[in-house]
Every structure is written in C-alpha cells, then in structure tokens.
Image 1 (spheres, one colour):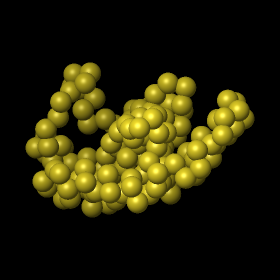
Image 2 (cartoon, helix red, strand yellow; image 1 turned 135 degrees about the horizontal axis):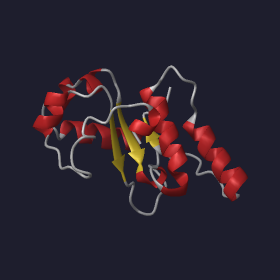
Image 3 (spheres, helix red, strand yellow; image 1 turned 135 degrees about the vertical axis):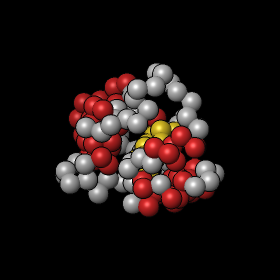
Image 4 (cartoon, rainbow, N blue to C red; image 1 turned 180 degrees about the vertical axis):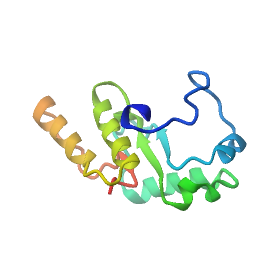
Length: 137
C-alpha cells in the first residue's frame, strides 16, 4: 500500500512479513506510521473518533520512545481498519494512505468509500464508523 501511493516502506527490503522491534523503528525514525488493525466484533471500523484515538494513543504509549519519533511529533501516526485495507475495498485503504502521505492533495477517502458502497454495491454507508484515523485533512 505504501509504495502504491508514493511512499517508501522502511521495511520494504526485509522479509515479506518481518517482525520488527521497537528499537529498529526508533533507529529508522519514520516520517509516517500507518498501523493496520482489525476493529473486531465484525465491525467495519471503530464506533467513534474517541475510540480510535484511545486505541492509537494506547498503541503509542505501549512503545517506549515512540513519542519522540518524527511521525508522532508531527501527528502523522494513523490507524487504518483492515476492513478497507485489502480485497475489493482496498481502493479505500489506498485512498487513506495516499491522503496521509500526500496531505497537499485533496483526497476524501470517506467520499470514495460512500460512492463505492452506495453506487457500485448498493450497500448503505456505515455512518459514524471510523475507518481511518485521524481523518485525512
């Protein structure tokens, strides 16, 4: 997803699914972090920005030193629901990644997801669900 949206995956040259420790991440000091996470309970996303914020802050607090990473200092740590990361909904995950990596572009992933669901699948958009957090600017 990262390279498909113009980013550089700092672990891209490692094994396909590398297990990275915090020290390695601290040394690499990424500009942007996108954490993919399954919301659980069969939900498409999280119930509110407050819930997503608590999860994201907990994720950062569990990792000593991560608050000093450039990504954290510049508010560029993001949470992405795996519901939209792969498969048919993957275009929405790519839209979130592109919006986060290129904030100067006017990309609205929520609008893209709504159009995809309602126009192409004839499925109701999950109002209030937080699929990517913080939202793209």
